[in-house]
Image (cartoon, rainbow, N blue to C red; front, side, top):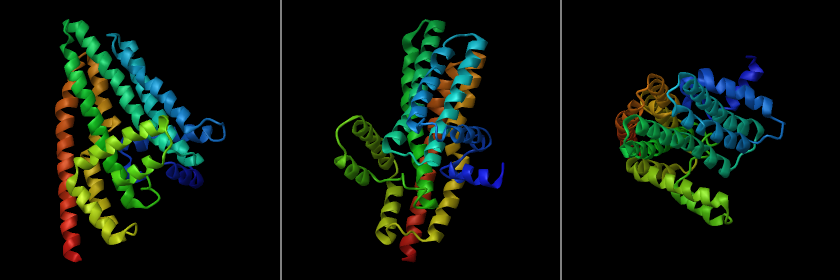
Length: 303
């Protein structure tokens, strides 16, 4: 890749620091090439997002069948959807076409893919064991997934907040979102924004020590956080992302999902989602809260 293309590629990313291995090596480079090709065609990021929803949701019914070729088609469908999920964000940054509606819609896309998957995995298990009880772990998995993805996105967006003001412009407090909501006109965008506020409310309620740390930073420095504080937090955040958060991303969960549907032991994925990933979620929050408390004490002591 030439130096010019490499700069464009990096500009198409939120930040190279928040990208995990598979995204850096596979999904993002493919997404960049597609996004660059789409620039100037009239195709918007929101169009790509909506298309990705249909492509990803198709994996659910394909995973229902105990047929290796249909299952492989479902795996390809979900991989293609994730590539498109990269494309919409990269296209938005390359073209400058951004909106609150697009960001919220993009966040909902992955939830819709996996909702379809949970429903059809439960139906497959129902047919196999002749019991509707498998819809219970399906519902628990869906709720777990939403919370895990929500917290993962929050911490990664927070990391961008400490990278630069431009990179972190999507990180907002619930109070800031309320002000935006009150100024919006009624419609679909305001409805989705209300849902987004619900996600933010959950994020803040689960991270009280982090909120105290952020409130202290805002009161002490406003938007001009000293570089040494930002760099120190980024170093700690990057370690936690690599060790914990990446396991709750699409790449972390899709590997287990693909193995489960390929081997026919689809119940393994529900077990992984409910037990393993929720343990990782709890550990992640604990680690981030510990880092936040430590940094807050240091700031108070230094000031």
